[in-house]
View 1 (spheres, rainbow, N blue to C red):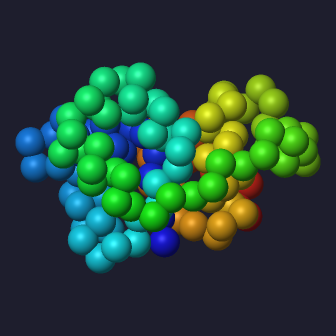
View 2: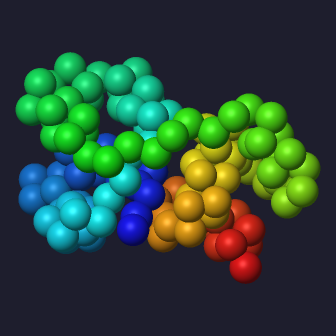
View 3: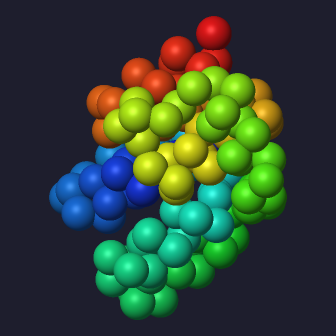
Length: 118
């Protein structure tokens, strides 16, 4: 199963042919959608497109983590000063807790995810 970061979705929606890896995992039904990614896409204007909105809402959704769990996770994994923000930390937490693979185009976020997943 895959948790997909906003950067991959944006690339998918903007690219003429979509994001190849995301297209592949979508076709086999291995994508979970995070509510915080939905918020970022909404703020970026992508959610206005009704076709995109329907497609995203049809995906299985992860539950948004409790703030207290994410704060404890940040402290336990020493994420302060690593170049990730709150949304990134929530995605890392959700992906690790759910044992999902994580797709992102954000190099720093990918590095931190891999470091924490070890």
